[in-house]
Image (cartoon, rainbow, N blue to C red; front, side):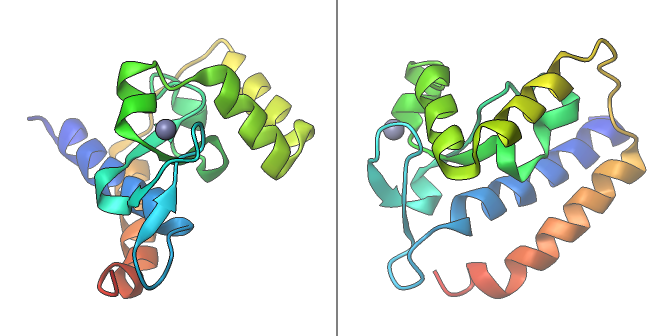
Length: 134
Ligand SMILES: [Zn+2]
């Protein structure tokens, strides 16, 4: 793998752990799927993206992402309509419309390696205290 791919994998991993543990029960580690309400241990869940990961502008935005069960994320294409309703209910319509506007901008410039390594460091630090408890 090239340096960009390595940096991206590191950023993705820590960001994903952050999203999946963010709303997990501190005692059991269980968390709810955004789109079906199913409840599983965070390590069995995916980090679901409302707007696809192919769009860089919103890929690492924590408001675009929520724990999602593997069935909803992988077998049902992320259930984007239900995902949208969930986010509108949680954050409000303006936040979701802002994500959508950003995702539709023409340029889809990929982040720099330094950007990715910063994302990796920020989320690793946020995760460090928490993940040990589950
Ligand atoms: Zn689900």
